[in-house]
Image (cartoon, rainbow, N blue to C red; front, side, top):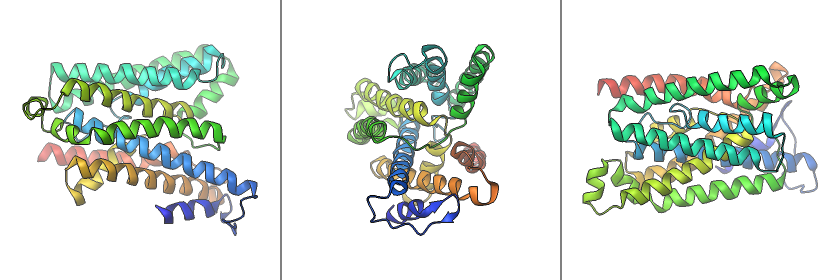
Length: 305
């Protein structure tokens, strides 16, 4: 983690900068630090959310982006961005969290009705299709300047944010991760099946209620401020399972840490690309380039196992 942060702080539009990391008066360093912290928080939020969703839905392919939680969150954020016109400060994160929460509840309902591996994935395809169509309709009727802002937001970008905003994101992610870590023993039993968890003394309703709330909180705040960054919640737990197994009491904290490292590195690569492309690659596009092949591999692996 320390090495990834050091590299990310050194990387700029012109490659590696000769930046004094102990010069606290340097405004460029302050901006870099806030962006690196934002990357770590978003990566931790998405990876821990993906790991918890996989346990709750007993589906190793579950991911906030793939199964539509991010899409539902984007619907709420889109409505706030276009129609509320920043009527109050936290309109976008509030509606993004609300959209993520209702989408998560919908997926849980689908899974309870039909506990098949493909159910959540098919429901996610339907939700993402609906979200895409809805957002397209909003873009058609929205003014041009809002359409441009919406397009930039949706692609998934890690921007330089103020310390006040970063503090709010840190609070939401910290609360969400704390809830999931506090329930990781119960989540481990839930991953074996809800009936088995109940037999072992787990209050499944309470675990699901708090876990879905934590996931919605984290996904909602990341989508609100960074747009749709996909596949982090899938790639990180999948890679870790190969080396440390499926014990959630180890997998969840490890996923949180590796998710933070992965997105810090991805953001550094995004900025480093400016040297050759004269533009930053949106980090959402970068994670999709990595994540889509991993998803295909994981789908093939679990279909043939």
